[in-house]
Amino acid sequence: MEIKICGIRSKEAAQVAVKHGATMIGFVFAPSTRRISVAHAKEIIATLPEDIEKVGVFVNESVENIHCIVKEAGLTVVQLHGEESSAYIQQLSCPVIKSFPIHLLHKMHCDRDKVDYVLIDSPPTQFKGGSGIPFDWGILERKQPAFRPYLIAGGLTPENVYKAMTRTKCNGVDVSSGVETEGEKDPTKIVAFIKEAKRAEGEMNK
Image (cartoon, rainbow, N blue to C red; front, side, top):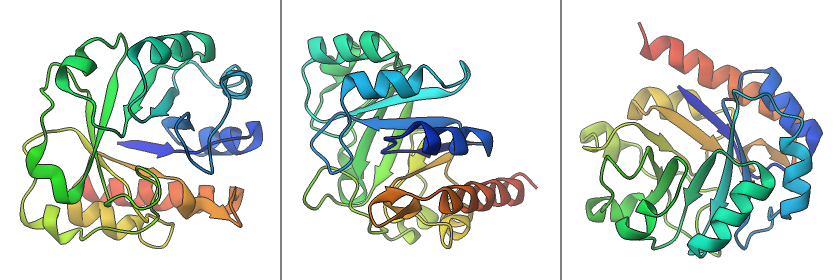
């Protein structure tokens, strides 16, 4: 089960997430209130254990720029939230998470040999992804997507992640605003979120 804490901008928040069981730490390089510089991300990544996935979030970025940022910052996974094609994805040299809003899931174009995870998210608002609004989990409860493994995002919080996971039978979760207070990562919420996600994982593995 993957537990991704995204929009990280401090060493302290990253360390709390890792200590309590996050498997992925996300850094946003696309337009967002949580955007981080390559240099700052590199500083944080240098403090993380080798077995933790360091995920860079991009939207319609050039392949060349992604390659440069991956190398400079020390990323291990690329997460795409734009209109990136299968041909584009095939040019990337590291594992890929491809995001699809729930209402466009039927148009999913990625092939199993090009994408490592699909991220199912809420429809975008001001920015691609990161709306902080849950989608209807019943859609996945009624019909599982053909592609696995898949993560879910969109309005997840410590209070609802258990329900979201056990209803959708997802392979992981991605959270950002749901573990924040006044726009900053809240250690207490990060710990609570991971605890509830692990509780759901235990229930799903019974």
